[in-house]
Length: 89
Image 1: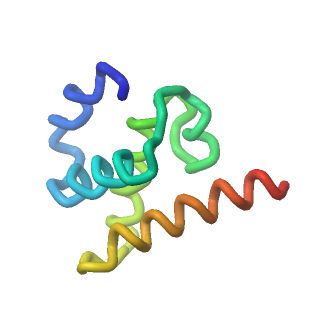
Image 2 (image 1 turned 120 degrees about the horizontal axis):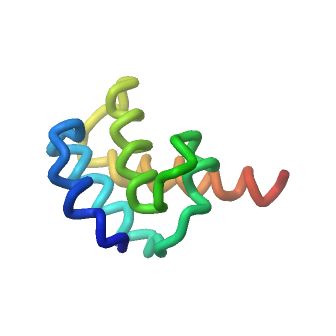
Protein backbone atom coordinates (compact mmCIF):
# COMPACT_ATOMS: atom_id res chain seq x y z
CA UNK A 1 0.00 0.00 0.00
CA UNK A 2 0.99 3.59 -0.41
CA UNK A 3 3.43 4.86 2.21
CA UNK A 4 1.23 7.95 2.59
CA UNK A 5 -1.56 5.76 3.92
CA UNK A 6 -0.64 6.38 7.56
CA UNK A 7 -1.03 10.11 6.94
CA UNK A 8 -4.26 9.56 5.07
CA UNK A 9 -5.62 7.07 7.59
CA UNK A 10 -5.00 9.48 10.46
CA UNK A 11 -6.96 12.21 8.69
CA UNK A 12 -9.93 13.28 10.79
CA UNK A 13 -11.93 13.71 7.60
CA UNK A 14 -12.50 9.96 7.50
CA UNK A 15 -14.85 8.38 10.01
CA UNK A 16 -13.64 5.41 12.02
CA UNK A 17 -16.10 3.25 10.09
CA UNK A 18 -14.63 4.45 6.82
CA UNK A 19 -11.11 3.65 7.97
CA UNK A 20 -12.12 0.15 9.02
CA UNK A 21 -14.22 -0.62 5.95
CA UNK A 22 -11.77 0.83 3.43
CA UNK A 23 -8.86 -1.05 4.97
CA UNK A 24 -10.86 -4.28 4.94
CA UNK A 25 -11.85 -3.69 1.30
CA UNK A 26 -8.22 -3.12 0.33
CA UNK A 27 -7.26 -6.39 2.03
CA UNK A 28 -10.18 -8.51 0.81
CA UNK A 29 -9.84 -7.45 -2.82
CA UNK A 30 -6.03 -7.31 -2.69
CA UNK A 31 -6.01 -3.85 -4.26
CA UNK A 32 -2.50 -3.06 -5.42
CA UNK A 33 -0.53 0.16 -5.48
CA UNK A 34 -1.02 2.40 -8.43
CA UNK A 35 -3.06 5.35 -9.57
CA UNK A 36 -5.57 3.94 -12.03
CA UNK A 37 -8.57 3.52 -9.68
CA UNK A 38 -9.25 7.18 -8.94
CA UNK A 39 -10.99 7.88 -12.22
CA UNK A 40 -12.97 4.63 -12.05
CA UNK A 41 -14.18 5.52 -8.55
CA UNK A 42 -14.96 9.10 -9.64
CA UNK A 43 -12.61 10.69 -7.12
CA UNK A 44 -9.74 13.15 -7.56
CA UNK A 45 -7.33 11.75 -10.15
CA UNK A 46 -4.26 12.69 -8.10
CA UNK A 47 -5.06 9.99 -5.52
CA UNK A 48 -3.29 6.66 -5.32
CA UNK A 49 -5.44 3.52 -5.36
CA UNK A 50 -5.59 3.11 -1.59
CA UNK A 51 -6.35 6.79 -1.07
CA UNK A 52 -9.06 6.64 -3.74
CA UNK A 53 -10.71 3.71 -1.95
CA UNK A 54 -10.82 5.64 1.34
CA UNK A 55 -12.43 8.65 -0.33
CA UNK A 56 -14.87 6.46 -2.25
CA UNK A 57 -15.96 4.58 0.88
CA UNK A 58 -16.37 7.83 2.83
CA UNK A 59 -18.48 9.26 0.01
CA UNK A 60 -20.76 6.20 -0.02
CA UNK A 61 -21.20 6.41 3.75
CA UNK A 62 -21.93 10.13 3.52
CA UNK A 63 -24.55 9.35 0.85
CA UNK A 64 -26.35 6.94 3.19
CA UNK A 65 -24.75 3.52 2.76
CA UNK A 66 -26.29 1.44 5.56
CA UNK A 67 -23.72 0.21 8.05
CA UNK A 68 -24.51 -3.32 9.13
CA UNK A 69 -23.05 -6.83 8.91
CA UNK A 70 -23.48 -6.77 5.12
CA UNK A 71 -21.70 -3.49 4.42
CA UNK A 72 -18.33 -4.92 3.42
CA UNK A 73 -20.06 -7.32 1.02
CA UNK A 74 -22.02 -4.45 -0.51
CA UNK A 75 -18.81 -2.46 -0.94
CA UNK A 76 -17.04 -5.38 -2.55
CA UNK A 77 -19.94 -5.94 -4.94
CA UNK A 78 -20.14 -2.23 -5.84
CA UNK A 79 -16.39 -2.06 -6.43
CA UNK A 80 -16.35 -5.19 -8.60
CA UNK A 81 -19.37 -3.92 -10.58
CA UNK A 82 -17.52 -0.66 -11.29
CA UNK A 83 -14.49 -2.61 -12.53
CA UNK A 84 -16.69 -4.88 -14.69
CA UNK A 85 -18.51 -1.87 -16.16
CA UNK A 86 -15.17 -0.27 -17.02
CA UNK A 87 -13.90 -3.41 -18.75
CA UNK A 88 -17.13 -3.75 -20.72
CA UNK A 89 -16.89 -0.16 -21.99
